[in-house]
Image (cartoon, rainbow, N blue to C red; front, side, top):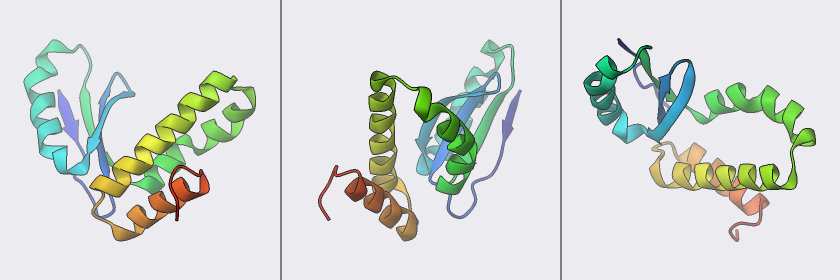
Length: 118
C-alpha cells in the first residue's frame, strides 16, 4: 500500500517513509519519482510506504523537541555529524527549494555557522 500527501506551497523536500520512519529524503521536484518508486516497490514491503512532502517549518516541528533534549547528551562525533547534516540540508534548500525566503534562511544559517561568507 502506498499513501501520499500532495505537495503544498513552501515544501522543499519529499520523504519516503517505511514502517513509520523516514528512509529517504529527496528534493521536492522529485516528488513524482518518489511516488513512482513507492508504487513499483510497495509489494516488496510488509508495511505501507508513505510519501510525505515537507517544508522547513515541518522539519523544525518534527526535530525541535529531539534537538533540545538530545544536544546536551551527544558526543562530539554525534554533534559533528549533526552539523554536517544541517550543512547538507541548508545547501540542498539553497539549491532546490523554489521559495526565495527559504533559500535566504538557509543561506543565513550557513553564514551563522561560518560555513560560507556573507
